[in-house]
Image 1 (spheres, rainbow, N blue to C red):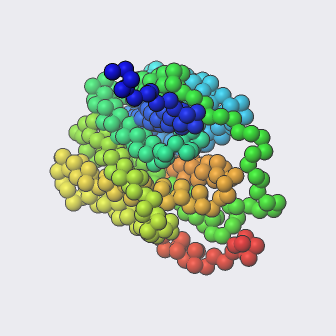
Image 2 (spheres, helix red, strand yellow):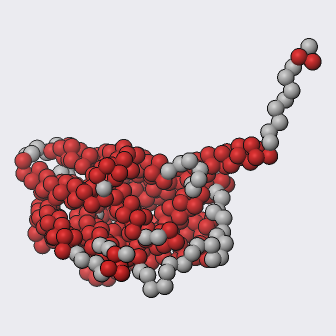
Length: 431
């Protein structure tokens, strides 16, 4: 019988290498997926509930907006510093672990600041909280920056798309927001900081045990850009980045103040419901990110950006007038119907923005292009919009804020279209 058995199949060296590479790609994807889930989920409560926490500690709307604006500046600086540090040293793992630990320390410090704030007034109170919040933002900014950089390097050629990893981030963001909202109802605002520490600790465990730093690039491997060429001055690129800045400013009216608006308009709304709004928005992002490339191929970047602008104006108008149309103590449930629009006003816009930055810059400048896009939209745009929005709420209220958002976006949509039609780049730049 032994003579009838088939001989064992021996893998050729090339086949063995291919099998090992496939296994490594699967492990890399799993590690990056869990990192996106834990890191993004950890920051969901801190990002979305921070305005409510600041308001509960006695800061008015203008002061809340000022603190939120300063955190964006801190994130911008932290992303640049730690991204550059990881690139120079190659120690992505060490930088991630160190900054995660520092961010957790600042988050825990926020839970013990309630008593000292009672003795502070005016600018002193704002400065005290801003110092701690900005410290957490400065160190916490490295996680998203480095995870994105690592995903681009480690996922290359592995058969997995960055968009599929973004789905895990959206899922972690939404699920954590509901859970943290329930924790706020049960234990108070300290739940958002404890949840941040717990999620960051889990992500740090993944980094410490399973993480593989991307291989260092060979010096000079990337071809330098031609002398005198500036990719960001070619074509209509300045107008597109100006659009991302303006969109970020107006998006801050929703991102920074929506939960505070619902909580102030409907005091009986539980915190877990505020998290539910975030979850609905996050879940609606998933199919958009999944099919974004098909939409980009079909309609193009410019049309999708204009569509996102138009729907954002309608979204703000709905926020402004919905409470007046629904005179009910449980009218906050109607806000759930508006959250699927987030899939277009953010997810579709962001997909188009990333695609534009990818096509506008040469291969050797992709890192700078994507970093500039994130900085212009999130840090400069949302930061400036948070400050302006806080001033509007303090002076005129939330209704005026969302009327301003609707009118502002509609006006900018028309102005941007005219600017693009009037743009006449120099022949050298167009070439």
